[in-house]
Length: 158
Image 1 (tube, rainbow, N blue to C red):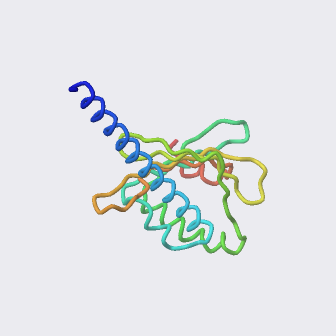
Image 2: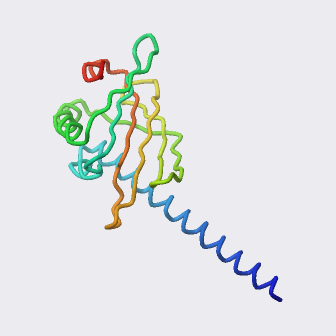
Image 3: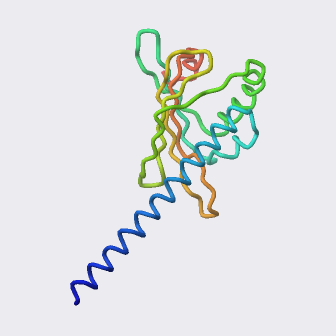
């Protein structure tokens, strides 16, 4: 009898634990879809999706294949986004994402995907780590996107 009760309790804990994990994964993926939609529609809500102290990395792929990480703070990145949105809207620039995966990490979820810039045939690695805030909102706390745009190299620490 005790063995059956323990087995039942264990089963319930696993069931609810997996359900909570699945719900959080679904929430994380929903946040990512909202992010993509906001970015591709030049929506100002995109700017609110970042934590004030997010780690932003542009990984530049040099013509010889070397990778150079260019890190910036959220404030600078938001300014760059604001300036770039007008040009992007004019050019109808959008990104499509494939191979989207959400993985639980210590401080939230890591969402990895391949990003394909509009008009290009290649796909680039990207990921973001999103963390649920005490108020229940999800925020991007880390983001890495590969790029072939060499202009970012001028911001690299030498």
